[in-house]
Image (cartoon, rainbow, N blue to C red; front, side):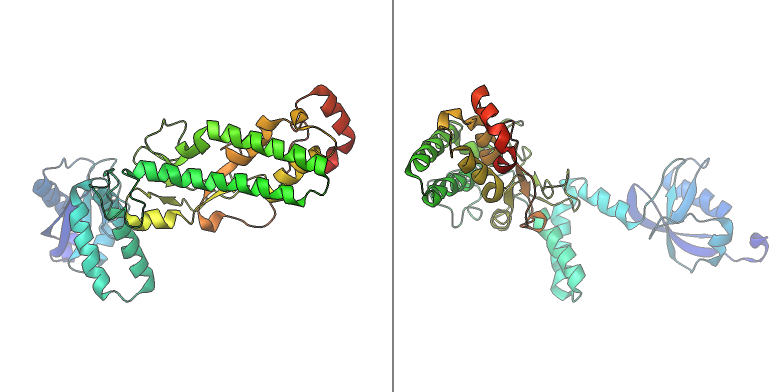
Length: 342
């Protein structure tokens, strides 16, 4: 019916594999599909058309209501189109368009007034202008600005960065000794602290967590240097999908310093108090140092989290009373004090 009264409608059509648009005039969908398939050399059987903007399927009736020069996408059988998101996905799926995207984003950013769009463009530039494939100081001097000259590679510095964070936990354990009034208990605590520090030193302060050159099982990042937020202490994964590559740029390296290695069972509220309590009437040799080492310094209890996912309130997770002591006699003696120990 539409074909009897409609004049040819001009539209702009493209395929899902090519963003080049071609002008086509057709009086109905049948003619549009025939001409479009000829232009793109696609099979007519199963071909269909949707709006480029949002992927809405174009029917015969809908076609007649479209404004002139509407942008359409021609699809083969079983192909789908999600709108502009598909274009973005194709652009970002390869480095071939990276330079063009960077220049385009810079140009748009210079005149953009919308805060939301400015943030989107800034984030795009931040991630596209990535130099993570460079490792040595002489290859990416900008990345090393402010970094001590003894570090010759990015991985060496990132390893040191992680070591420094974890060394800080040793200092917090040592500081707790000052709060112990009984000399005998304080002596046992200092022995324990010294043993824990020795265990950590033997493990090279677990600097491997931030070092992308380490084995996959030992590092927290990909081989390219990407870190993913592991979510707050009570979550299995980060709901916001935070990620960062501090190897990519100096700015990313600096921003990464705001990410936290968060203790799920808290260091000051649970681990150190449980250790202090355990030593009130036990020797350091009775205490399961391996358990406390894992809680204080390893991924068993540490989660890497974006600052937004770092919850500073009480975690309400307790030490396991069954793990605190390493001898049967000490465990038996502690049963009556289980609640206090955790």
